[in-house]
Structure formats: C-alpha cells, structure tokens
Image (cartoon, rainbow, N blue to C red):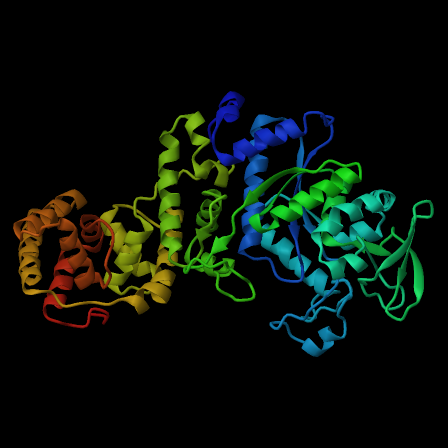
Length: 531
C-alpha cells in the first residue's frame, strides 16, 4: 500500500472519489464528532443476491474514498425492511400451506419455513449477515422491526404525523385515482391479528400521536403511530429512515430514481435532509433484457464464485456503474483477466494514478503483491488441450513453464486453476466444435510441426520464439490475413474461434504435447478424448 495525499484524492476522476467529494460538501455543517452515515437497504422477503453484493461493494468503495478525504468517523448501516407485510408466498419456499396462513403479517412474525430461526425475516436477516461477512464487509446491521418497536423511530414518526397533509400532497399526485382514495403513509399493525393493514386513515391526532383507521368490517380503530403499532408505506418509510438515522449517503438502482426524488421531498417535508444519492444502472442478460429474479434470467453470486474470485465480481461492479451491462457467464473470463491486468499494473503506477486503478478500490488501498504470470483465458485453453480435471495436472504444466512455481507461492494463480477447471467443464467443453483442416491448413500444420521440432531440438522453448515461428508459417502459407491462420489453429486444435496468444499457450502446454495435438487433428482423431 502506498501513501495517498488528499490533494491527489481531491483531483481523482474515479467515480468513488467524485461521490466522496459530494458527500464531503453534504456533511460540511454536520458536527465533526458525529459519524457520517452510509446506508444500504435489504428486503428480506428473498435471499441476498448479486445485486446486494454490488450495492454494498460500491457503497464501501465510496466510504473508503471518503476516508482518504476526511478524518471523520463513518458507519455503514445494512438496513433490513423486515417489518414489511408478507404479501405473497414465493414458490421456491418449503411449507407453502403454513406460510399462506401468515400472509400480511410482518416478516418477523411469519414462522421460518426452514425451521432454523424464530421467523422468516430472522432467517433471511441471518443469511444477509452471513453473506456480507463472507466478503469481509464492515457494516452494522439494523432491523426495521427493532427500530419501530424499540421506539427508535418514534420521534420521526411523530414528525410524519405532524406533517401528514404535506406528505399526502407529495405522494397523492403520483398515484392512480383508486389508490389515491385510500392511501395513507401509515400502515396500522392490527392489534388482533398482527397483520400489516392497508387501511384508509380517517382521522389524525397530532397531540395524541394517533391515527384512526377503518377496518374492512367497518370498525373504526384508534392506534398510536409509535412503538411499532404502525409502520410506513415504503417511500415514506425510506424518507423517515433517512431522517431518523441521519443517513448521509445511499445509492439506488436506476429504476428507483422517481422513488428517490419522492422520498427526498418527504424527508424535507418532515424537517429532514435527504442523503447524497447515486443511481446505478441495472444489469441485462445475454440478450440485452433486464435481469429479473422471478424470471431467473441472470447469474447468481454462487454461480459467479464457482468460476471466479469475488475480486473479479467487485471489478465488474466498479466499472461503469452508470452504464447498463450484460451480466452472464461469458463475461466472467474477461473480468478475471482484467482484474489480473489491473493488479499487475498498480505497483508501477504513481500514487495519484493508483486512485484510478480499480484494484485500489477493490482492496481499499492494500492490494495483494503476487505476480500472476498466466491469464485465465490461457488456463482455460490449457485445460482444454490437456483434458485435465484436477489442479495437480495443470500445475505440472505450469511448473514446467515457471521454474520453481508452487501453489503456496502463487495462491491467486492456484485459485484461478480451480476456477478454470470448473468453467471449462461447465461452459467451454459442451460448446466445443472442432473442424477438420483444409488442404492448405493441413500443409501449414505439417510445416508448423517441423518448425516446432526444430525449436525443441535447439532447446528454444520461449513463448516469443514459438510465436515467431507460428507467425512465419502463416506468412509462408500466404494467408491474406494472419488472423485467419490463428483462427484456424483455434478451431482445429482447441474447438473454438478465438483463444490466447498461441506462442504462450505452446510454451506452457509444451512443444512435444502441441505436436501430438496437431498430429491428432491431422489424423482425424476425437480431440475431446483423453490420450
């Protein structure tokens, strides 16, 4: 880690520093003794997912950038909306019949269908904390149920009641005619059933701190808005939470821009100050369509972590957060190799330039020092050519290429080896399509064998020397575009239309092994079969 001066940080164009500078202005009048509050929200009706990781990772990057600009203390709150009413039973949960009997109750009152926690909300909250802990995030967990029932929100809830008409005037124009007729920012929690009700409020009493609502059976009920007897509709709830907790920074997806605007107006109406905001773009699937949890057309974080390290996912989240990006399995190898490239560059950069390197933000300024000399794409092709299904086999090739290399000395590379085997087995191998060489390509392959044999005889096995000979064969065979020659090598020998620098591949795989691979292709043998 290098020392970063604040002047460089103030001039950095990296988006976390741009956000941190906005936040610095936002909290200028806040007492220095008060911590700057960052917040991320979580809806515990479902499990944490790749979007959860993205929001917390990006928020943490801004928080780290802020620490460079200011000595002020900070806190990151991971807030769970676990007092929301349970409106629908997800089809992927066990004990469906039991769950259906608890519709409309707060998530923390719905029994846990898995039988491991006191409630469904508690189960998913525990999953959230375990999820965040897995990645080493520094955060404080807060539960909506605890905040409402403990009285922590009481003072701000009374402010909402005090400014009830102002809040209504902000929200009602955004609703349809039918919804406007029954809308109230307060959702009473029925004392008899425990349900979170969407009932019309017919009276408010600021002095008493109560509302009167009308139940479906026509009965009028007076209830306090404090102590967990009511909760707020989510846009009003979001604003109330900002004010009650003193939130200074929270980001949200582009789909919530209108909600952020509305909640900000409500926050001001109840004598509060909305936080600095940042709207990130949503992910798309491989067809360019919006990813939806219900459709299942995205990639889960568990799937990403089967094929790559969390650092590569953090890099994906760092890059172009305001640009819609496709999130599917084919982006993983590129993300891994880009991470390795950025990691290799940062030690040579000037401190001020390091602030624009994603690795600085991913590792909070303390990046690993390991040199990773082999790309992920090259490892994938090594797996392909060797038909290796275990790390030990691949390491034998690597050690022949890197004298003295071991898994202990290269832990990042060792992880890449395991990821490459998984990715190859699940995605590359099923999609491989080998083709037979044309007569011209056959002649080129025969010539390549001769040149490789000559190199081996001289003991010349460097990637550069091998690449030179591969180029020479392509030129001698009069390919109009040498890319066509390399494409032919990939298609014939590796079963794909593109691949790594071929000289580097041969240097790692071995000249005798590559000659054997070529002869296998010339003989028309099954290229996927083990030798």
